[in-house]
Amino acid sequence: MQSTDLYPDAPFDPKSERNIFITLTESEIGLSNTITMSKELLEANVFIYLPSKDVTGLIQHNEAILMDVFDYDTKITTTHIIRKDGDKDFKFHGWNTVLQGKHFRTGDTIVFWWDVFHLRLNFKQFMFSFV
Image 1 (tube, rainbow, N blue to C red):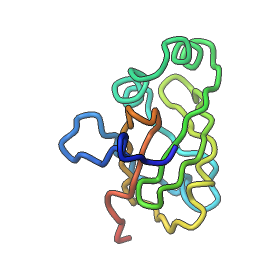
Image 2 (image 1 turned 90 degrees about the horizontal axis):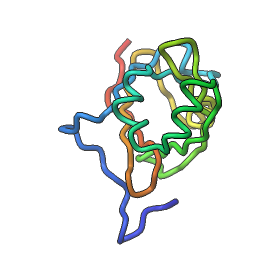
Image 3 (image 1 turned 30 degrees about the vertical axis):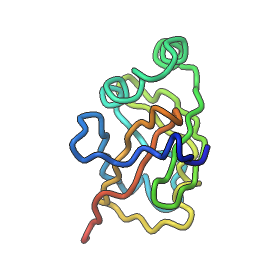
């Protein structure tokens, strides 16, 4: 869903305690199809906005859920499949669609935040690596 005058895209708020900062690893750039986020970060900052049946299915029954991820800079939304990966992490499958046209490097930091009006996870590049 695109921004409207009534419900503009939620901008990044550097003061928000709900921001999720991810420093990209070598396995999350290039030809990667996934990005990993910790259970603790998602429980505190994203799962609180999702239907409880989706969260229960994801955590307890290893069910996948779909989540829209919005690139705040390019205004492109992609849909990702979220799956549990072990006991402490979740993988966002579909990350390769975000990587197309991006030039991320190992060590770059991405910030994610929940958009309550559009029910999606927004992100933007927060810091560039100088490696």
